[in-house]
Length: 535
Image 1 (cartoon, helix red, strand yellow):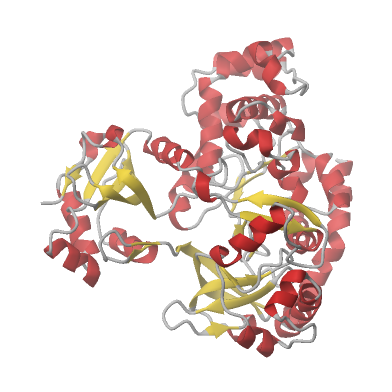
Image 2: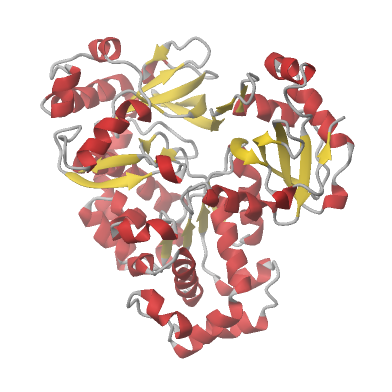
């Protein structure tokens, strides 16, 4: 397709620039900082912080503190309300919401400079994609949207929902020509209507060659919804008309495909890789998160679409990009932002060129959003180098829970789970800390996807023993401050988990399966009856 060829050509310059700088990451990052502080220094925020336009790397590191979103919230909210200046000298494009509780959504200012920084990572990734998977050139692509909760849609601009908006204008236009699903589906009345329209376009595209989603659970949800809506979709694709959903589709054109309608009508809606292979015979690549708690769901997505290769996403956040897949590794996107890395044990901060294989660190980013020395809540491990540029493996969220002083982290929970034997047929979804473990006492619950009868009574006890390797957890259990750990198995637990995340205001499509979360209040009633609890 001509669009693919032109997009590859447009990204070639960024690819060359990335490859040429691999030999000297220190020089590249120092230049990146020099340009950034000049843009920050002349802004209202830069003057308030006393940022110097000529600061060196060492001055920047020593004179500004490590920050989190709460350090910026008031400044960002004033700017959103029109009462304060921008955080950086670059035209503002929009404010992008991140996942979080609805009352505490984080709004990240996307400037032109920041979007150019993202484009600096997208360009080498695109060129490498076409080289590694030439079948991508032979069909349409689907890059998932950042799905907004229905309640927020009326206040959102349409480009907030469109991942193509992360590209430069030229690449956006070229990439748009390769897309199987038009941006207009994001304007549908509800998330369900957008999802239905997305599926209609996807199943109508026999030449689909790329399915790119952020969360593998979102990809699995797409395939599950296809089974639920197969009759309605078959009718819509036969008629070329949205039917009862017409008013909700905001004028989006309806696709037509008698071939896809016939396949849907002949399908029983059950998990069948042969059906998906017939539906999308040219599917060359599926891309999704595949590390940490997302790993088992990525494997399930691969199993359902075996005709395609699979590629992990690297580490992207609403606040910026850390790594992306390139030549078989996940190098630091050193041409995008300014990066530092903090040791979670002693808080020592390292420059990218100081990292050594095996180190476990937390990324700090200073970006074209104007957020400086911004700490992500992610733990990564240096697993090698590409030239002088470190390659990083995402280990998981660094979130901790502290119901009664036990101070558990995602890493410690992951280590505990590694010590327990989960039977075949059960898939761990995650561990949740609840203020009331259905006993009137706080506690921890392991959620598993599968039939309850497969859950052995001893599993909860083994988990509790493993968690007691953490001194503070053991003390809290000894003092009866925490209920014993419990396990709950349910068919469709993945969907129950995702529903709870949505109820807590998280954004569809961007929800990560996290190894540890805090669910405030009681354990949901739907999960209580079949819990197995440690004694």
